Picture (cartoon, helix red, strand yellow):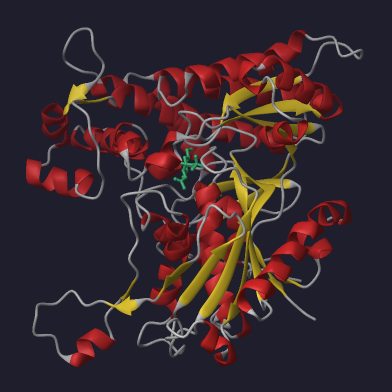
Length: 553
Ligand code: NG1
């Protein structure tokens, strides 16, 4: 039997929850939500769903690899059990009378099980970008368009973002699919929004899958592979204003139960499932405030947080080009290009290159010439880049909204290279057969702690409250569990940061005690019900990536 590389495998289609979750126990835990979703769909729309699309959130795992995916360095995420489910079906002509105005081809009626999210109805149109005198044919073949309101965070924007890619990839005039069908969808989810656990990618991936399924694309030859779905989902996510890397989409789509994924982006997307040490359990704890990236990509904070880091990181990669520094600094962009025949990245060479950079004084080039500060002004950055201002603005600033007087290239680059090296070390420890389990866990924990220090001090993407939570988690190492000192090996912020979740590496036998310790020790959890706490602090095993469930009677 030929084993397909993980990214080339087809999107799985299941008809039982046990197969889907890979475990009867987990399936039983979730069966109630699935039943409710299917029942509510019928109540709301008057017909049954044909498919449920599922996409999980992500923890960056097990763990090093924060803020390096958009610089095209490999990352090490895993999918979590928390997921977004979207029940969907083509709207039968017989129910058109229920929605008389909403039955044109491709129209969508979108509902959410959370009552605070209201029903949304929208229809894509073809939008040309030519002048006023447009021949009718030009409109017919123009790209599909959906209005996405980027001025505020709206739940349906993620649904529309997923649909956008389906329309433009599968319903182009040259494609074999004629016109999109009208679709009804119902959304529910358990990924806490804005927590660094990738709720946005899970929404976009599941929406993409739902529209593919409702349009019968899984029934034909056009069904995308997992890798293709990642690329479509990444493009889709950019429609909501985030120029993110591909880590979240890769984990959400390609993940396999029991493994984390080493995802590399150069020369093209490649995912390698890697089994973690047997006793390694990762526990997420939420600082109870949403991550800045999520609430902000269109609003204030992204301008001086996530999006600014993207510009600083790309700028740091660009600047040394002028001074003919090692080509490793010039990571190839656009990893989604299909370069299947290109040789895989040589990780030993990459590691050696990173070590050389970090040991030498290559990065000093990025330091400010002004005594006492490391950051540089825009003018200085343009000057160092060797580009003229118009060119520089076009390449680095025209597509992103940033607000700053200074750019911190040196510290950001140092974080990126050190973090990229930690990911390779993390991967090697997991793969290495030699060491005993305990010393493996200790090494992984140290890498996580180092990663947190770097996120906090060099990348400036932590938060005082997140640091408090990390400290509470690490203090478990001083607690007597009755079996000796608590075995927490490392703790760090996960995801974009500036709030959100931390993730801790804990010995399997100590997980329950660790959770109690964190729940009691972190001041913001005081007075919360057990049910709420269960949503804020939870252990997670690497879970299954996105899939489609075919509903049968
Ligand atoms: P979260 O915080 O889960 O949204 C974001 C980016 C990732 C990656 C991390 C930082 C999105 C969808 N995801 O993750 O690509 O850059 O931050 O490592 O924006």
